[in-house]
Length: 254
Image (cartoon, rainbow, N blue to C red):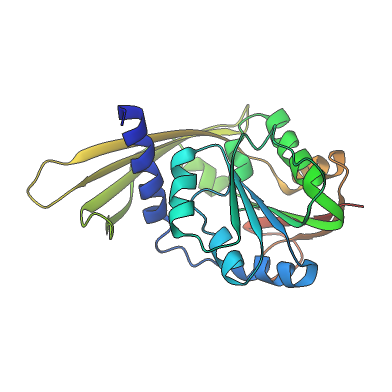
């Protein structure tokens, strides 16, 4: 295994550790929408399967698309039957024909596509995958000025946790830099893991994120040929309003 493979495997494992204390508030929304639409279901940027696994456990056939083989390997190792994995760039991947009744781009994944044309392509991929009447769901964070003011490259401790897979203690620190001119954030995560009193191993992940707001998300969906059913401010699909911390778009393929 190459150093690059070791690094990718470590970051996939640590991504699961990042989510270890995530409350999973969005999962109830996806299960409710799946009950409304039926399957099959598509998730773009599926990662290690946080959303895929409960949908598969509920009996739905799910296709998980991601460009990171280490992430998909962890998904395959933990997923139930009924999950199909596809290693592909979600901005260029298209199914042979419209197949899905529900298509998901969850938990800020669209931010990882750091250029507007790539974000537009992701919405086009959702639209192309859906059967007529099928639903696309996109979930984004809406940072306020206070949130963005903290993105000045200061180093912040995010957590100290024990990785249940290795038994090692992991310390995660993060630094971010917001560029208002391009609406981008350069996010660096530094993981140090080891046993008490022993040398630590360090892993570094760096992402460039392009933030978008609710209005731009709606524009992208409409440009992809989708009709907006709802623009909500929380996972209960209450209306978006002042102070909403998230925007959840539910759009339909005509």
